[in-house]
Length: 312
Image 1 (spheres, rainbow, N blue to C red):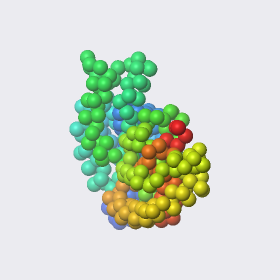
Image 2: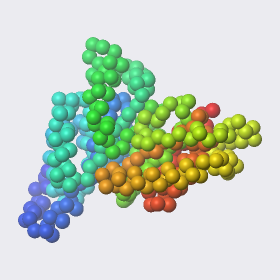
Image 3: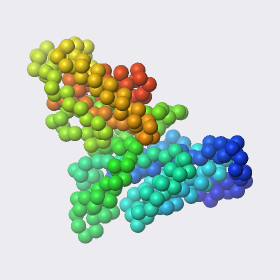
Image 4: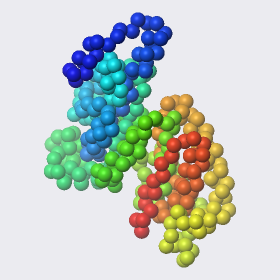
């Protein structure tokens, strides 16, 4: 950190003129705050951002985040993107996080909160595999520590700009998700992930919006369509020839236009839209593909994920 402080010693002092103020604004680093459940992949996410050229600081007390951003702003462009990992190891500082976020907003700092999530079962399995206790379990069990951490992070999770559920992801899949969200040269106004899923495998915990396609007849019960997925043209044709399918797509796309406009006004830059059917193989896949195409045509950068396709 001293190296970056030394770079800032020679920075020009803002005189308060409009031109200088604009120059200073362009020098303010972009900030990502990485948090989430212990064992959910914070270290992997941080390493991925580091590989993408971000300046990463691990376990920085939240009260010092504005100071870190100020140092970056005085680095003459050498530190343009900062990622800060905040976790329960610094829990005595956690009460300062909201105050720090308010301070950053007042300075017009472009910041995002990334929250890494995972199921209790996945977290227990990971802690047991490395034979390490949970940071908050004390004299109790691993599940006690996980419950305490969920309670501590509940408000932050609700305020997160992007939630990634790593329950079923390996390290390489998490890195791919991080690359998809942060590797672009220019950040889009709004980036959407459209995810198909099967209700019998559970709701996706990282979804912002969930919609149900089970009101449509299931191609699973058509013998010649059963082996295929919603990516198949015959399956998609069957789905969208059913009463209400096209109307549903049209009206939901219109609703998403309204929601997307509100997200942009509020500065929300990521949204995960989950589309479900029974097994996540036919109806939800076909609907997700059409919905993603609609969003892309409207200028929303869109990623498609078929969570449960191929599980049967």
